[in-house]
Image 1: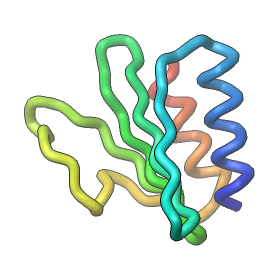
Image 2 (image 1 turned 90 degrees about the vertical axis):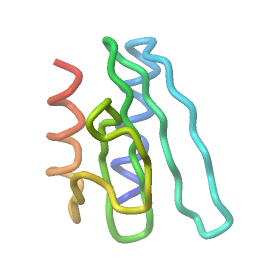
Image 3 (image 1 turned 180 degrees about the vertical axis):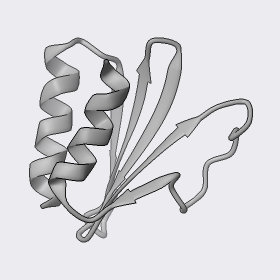
Length: 85
């Protein structure tokens, strides 16, 4: 599930030339920082879930608890696509 979601996100970001950085961890988890249309998003991907957060003035800090967590690719991809519209 998470590898499918990861590949989709990276492919879309690359195809659209959207600035992003990927951080990989020894645990296998990945974090994707995304700068798009004046917004900053962080996507956390581990073996069981995908977390998505938007970093804003009201939500300036980043911690291990994302704004939203998804346990299937379809829901995670829908949320990702929603902020690219």
